[in-house]
Image (cartoon, rainbow, N blue to C red; front, side, top):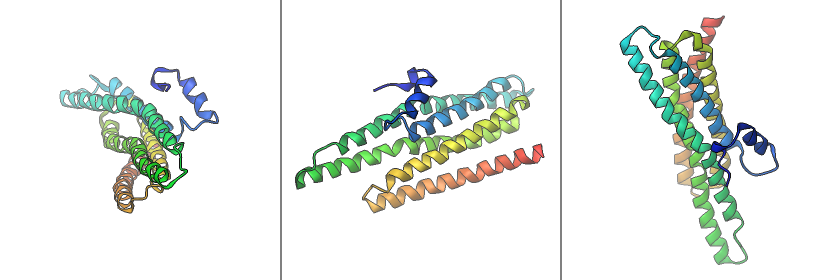
Length: 210
């Protein structure tokens, strides 16, 4: 399997446009989040030793460290999503000519589907965790990079939204209703909280630019 983390961006974009199952929306979601986090890291890097306050400078260094970890994981998730979706496709190719084969295939498919939604779920979780960090960076970071910070938040919003689309596309095929309810409730609440915070961030932008 290709590792897009080690390939040019052009290869990733071109492959996504082809008539192939992957890379697709899940990998695009992780890529959007990685880019959003990178923009926030740029702001943080330009803000270190520029705040005039030792306390704030240390806080920005901590922010930069947290963002670096999130960025690294997001880049891994670009390929992880492809890998997990490939597992689903492998299960779908299993024979189903008799009851035993059908039951075995269904069992494997349910397991593969649950694993497949773990990638967009993690994109959603990490992106949501970064939102309050971004909000704080907008407050204390280098003001010359303010537009980059807001662009980073916008990309994270897109990442969360596209991750939600991908989770919803797969969760409906999971037969365990309890699992579906628990999963949808957990991530529905997380996404709602994140979008509310993002809305607050962009209200601040609008108030400062109108």
